[in-house]
Length: 321
Image (cartoon, rainbow, N blue to C red; front, top):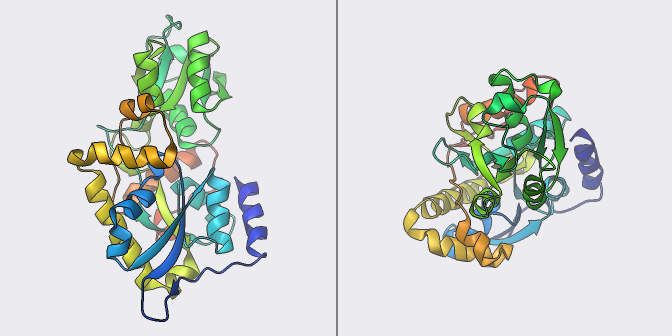
């Protein structure tokens, strides 16, 4: 991750305009935001489609990018004013001297809607509980991501010597294939993939590793961020953005809007009908208080993804509620 943000720093030298523009006639403020094509990153395009940005006087260009390096690069270069990522990435940037700050909440873990499950392949008949995974292989999307780190925490809490566990990195669709073939007995999987695996009788849920991040209490899995100097120079825009996100969250978290939310999500992600129908929608959170961010940072330190502890309040912009 440090290498990623070293690259980002070099991108900033190439220039870019990180100031929001306002029409000379006093029209809407134009900004650009970056996110990913997934339900976890859907707030941006939900807000645009439902008019929540417009209601705040914002004219927003929503850019869909491939992943974390592109999100960081977009903000650091000034190509985007706001982007969505994990607090883990913001903490890594901070540790490297890059002043990103959290401005609004994203995906919220709750015990009822964890968002990730440790799936056990139906062929792995010898795995009945977490302690049975000692000495075995587990698939995850990438090392030092929250699915990986939380799985380490869950195993460690269950008394497993995590040094004996081999982590195999695969994308989420490939994890299902590996579980089906018996290549790995277990994998940390997000929705809609765990729903599809259960429906196809490929694998079944064991535990949500995210339960081990904060002892089953709420925490923020993703957050919206901006550069510290942009926040200082554009306080009114930041407040408008926060207000739009809160309106989006209220709409998106209402079960009455599930069908329309899935329709908008499908438009931007092009997920097939079966995946959209199986999708367990994420819950979004408004507040960005330290107690919702610190648990993730502590897990990073616990398993070496951060060399030194970081206090959550140092990476959260003021008035982040």
